[in-house]
Amino acid sequence: MALITFSSRLHKDKTVYAVAGSHTQTILTLAKENHIPIDFGCGNGECGTCLVKVSSVDTKRSPMGGPLTNREAVVLKDMGYVTQPELDQMYVDDIPPTQWRLACQMVVRDEDILVEYPSK
Image (cartoon, rainbow, N blue to C red; front, top):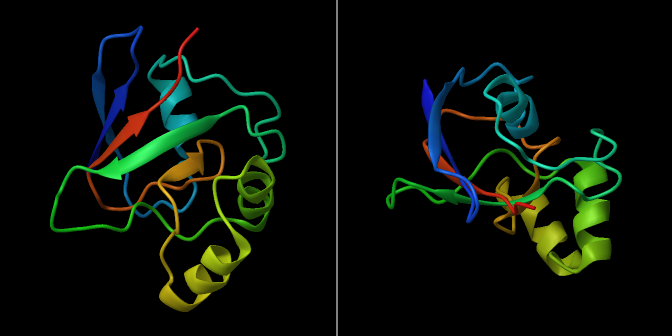
């Protein structure tokens, strides 16, 4: 099981257990199940509303989740959070090129992470 800590300036930090390796449980799904107020619009990786910053809690591990989905890559590139050369390298390295992710697209892996999200 992975421990996911959600952090925001306006809300108390909350740590929850995630079923690692389910290949279906996204950060947004986990947030909804635990009443964590991450903003989202479309829920399918097209609008960028659910942008979060993800970092590893374990300093010995750097990958945070799997590679970006195709939709996520397009949105993050359009928003200026990732470049085309970084995306090209991601497909070689099999790790995401940025800490910025879309909560509706990032699937939880077996790693403890910190998810920072904006609050209104």
